[in-house]
Image (cartoon, rainbow, N blue to C red; front, side, top):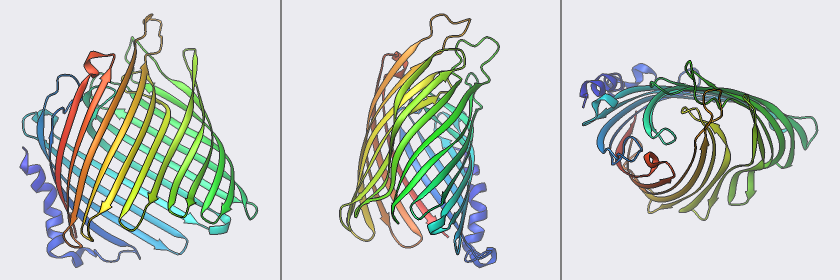
Length: 385
């Protein structure tokens, strides 16, 4: 493993830890600046997520700087981090991945709100659609504006941008933007209903001189939803609707839209989270994908310092190449997976948090390469300065 990477990344935080006040890790520009350092050891029985099932262990070190500022109606947050991933055997997969995120929100209460986010992530991981490890630069941004022109009724405007720039040879990049909006209705100070439409062209780029597939499309999404506190102990958002995908090279397809994240606080020590989604996507393998996900997570606090959790998810993905002049027989593929997870956390004090997790994934497919099992075990320690 490239321990020198870890030492280089750890040096600045070591200095801060010795003398945090010199770097103002208390209050900066009326905001709070903090630092964290996370060291994780992981064993993965299938680092490429395919039927070859190559196993390896890795050491991952991630230092981060975090800034948070809340003044009146305005809140700002930012995070800068760098992950050094070092494998024991497959050292060609070693990487240093930076990331940056910015968030800005203005809450005018009765008048509405404005929220903007921007993120950049260098990603180096196993891609389940590709059944291979791939590197990419991910740039994403979004803005949401809610404006109430009466006590309960208002309008919403949405805009978003995505660029998945794949650096690994043989894979295409994906670029899209989203524009739309609709009506919002405030049932109560804690619950809002919405009915919106968004238009989103999605382009597959860098397909090569003679591509066998081009899944570029224009997408129309219609949805209605609720967000906020649905019941005294149930919070989150639920949205349902339809998605119409119109391919640039001809043809179209439609599916139902689901986007739901719910959290249920059973009592002071127990909580359950539910996730459900169904939507279209474009893969770096030049395929159109319909992805459906159902998941449940539970959390139990054994004490003030110790908590444990369990999770289960079921995912169904339908992937299909889109016809080009040089490809008269586009391939189709369906993947189905079940993933189970266990995790635990021990907060030793305000600075140190120790975590451990196990996961088991069983992937079935009508493509032989995508039939595999994948198990991971990870232990980590996070120290906050």
